[in-house]
Image 1 (tube, rainbow, N blue to C red):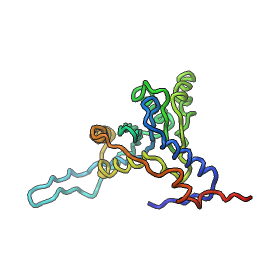
Image 2 (spheres, rainbow, N blue to C red; image 1 turned 45 degrees about the vertical axis):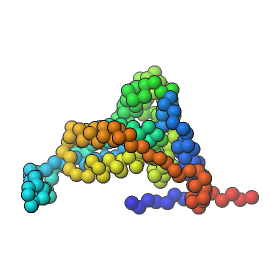
Image 3 (cartoon, helix red, strand yellow; image 1 turned 120 degrees about the horizontal axis):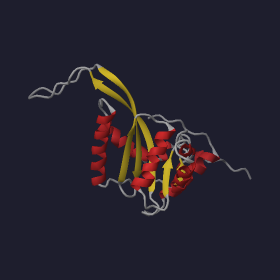
Image 4 (cartoon, one colour; image 1 turned 180 degrees about the vertical axis):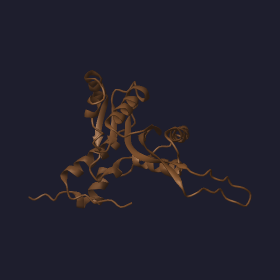
Length: 223
């Protein structure tokens, strides 16, 4: 995958180091660390029924398909606990993001003192989305439930949720899925298996590593 190298930018390195410092925090069930990201999934149905495999003959699928729109998948991954929650929505507006985050707050981590979230700078991923979705009292309550840390522009590789989304795509979504109901069933089965296996991610890239390997991204200080 090609990516655009960021220019030397103090704002970039500041946000990068902020995220890297968050990843150094020890596991704390009262302050869980959640990495959040989302991807679209095109819904495709077969026009002709596929033929199942038989002795000496592989399964066959016609090249023609029917487009059934696009769904959105929200990945919420707690790397230190090996837990993930994937929500499937029909759209990707501010209201969907705010509603999913409310589920995180009230259903997944109701006892947490504060929920630390790593996420990118997509225009829907903002505390103001709570105010565009809920009444002010509820919006304020949700804002205070979270502590947001944003990855810099061109720095989405800093979000561990991208690793988990990559596994989801390769293991579950790399084929035709006709509708949101089938997509939800497939994703929930994948999610349950991964959670039962307690699949974690051990992040090893540190701030010290960044200052050495990505030295070219840091502004040069003129004395």
